[in-house]
Length: 340
Image (cartoon, rainbow, N blue to C red; front, top):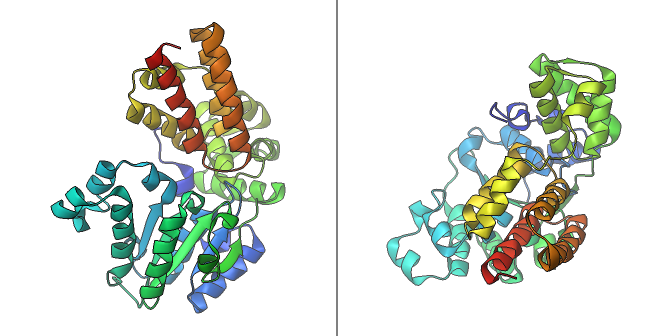
């Protein structure tokens, strides 16, 4: 998608959040700021809800909402963390040289919490996809939360709250972002389609909502894909546009990059498929296997299928699609390197 993503262009306000109980609890956090634990399945709208909360609570949300995607940061190398433009301003050359990756990430947490809010009495730090945070980092986070509680609201978003240590869970008010119902998804799609001025019919929105199966982000991106391809959203156009990811040049190039050891390029293409194009990890996994069957034969195909079975099980558990499919790409690269 070259056009602006509808998920960003039509980000919901608090009033637009379809889950009534979550909406009520978030409204309460405006009146009485507190640390929050926002949890629910992928695509339920956790990140969008926190951004909507920041819009309501901060005069300058661009400055006073700090977003740290845990899955993304932990996947970076030490050098990438040190040179990331979000963090490089408070990582000097000595710290960059002498510190471990763990020390750098701990420093990022502390520095993000310590600066003075640009407006109002506090700022908000969102730690997204927090199920990937190791226990030692969680202990460091606990200490930062204790030290900077007066001027910093921590919001932890995760699919698996059980992965967080009890001292962190006890310091946060829990907000459940359940998967939206089919009717709630249709309502959200109708709101976006009306704002875009898109031609649609009820059957088209119903089909897109069913295709997304409770993933609100995927539903909005699927509606955008359908409109961009067909100029309208009907059952027929949605059906044609939303077939599973085809084994196209993107997936071919992603696998070729993995084989060549160019994992940064491979992950960039994977991000395009998962984020920009809105495909699920399961769809991409199926497409990777289709390409594998066309490129290889014999034992290598069998081994990749064996690994993919394990990856598929991990995807069902609801953890990071990016991390698990990246693992498969790394395995493909290793098999190519060893000639197995």
